[in-house]
Length: 146
Image (cartoon, rainbow, N blue to C red; front, side, top):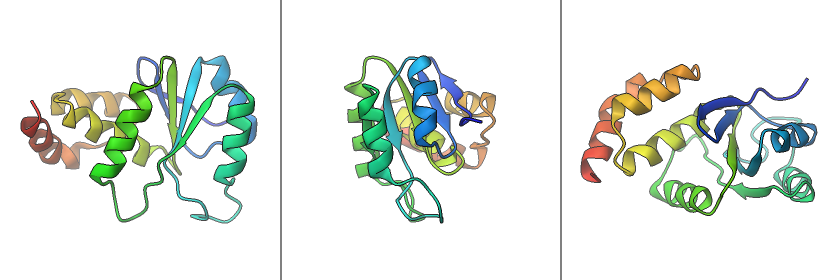
């Protein structure tokens, strides 16, 4: 059984950990960019970044590694995310252990770009992710950059 690709927005999916076998399913969805938000070695038997990157590139999919550790999301993570997404014309698939870090990274990037916190929270909730504890943070970030 493949990974569960969860649509967050048009042409943007999040997923729990993927495997090399999931790359073909991603390609069939129109994914042209995979963003890995999971550090190598976070869990035993986790696929290695290098192996996933090789499989993605062999399928014609760009692959960007933006590992987010327990220390949290930094401005550098947001900058790397924004650059990767801006350079991509097709659909994007971001993954981590459960999809939550990838969803949070997109939420913060959206807020930084000036999107309304309620819209961001609704987008995440519709995909099954509760980011409501971060509403004030998203509002503050959006207000700084709008």
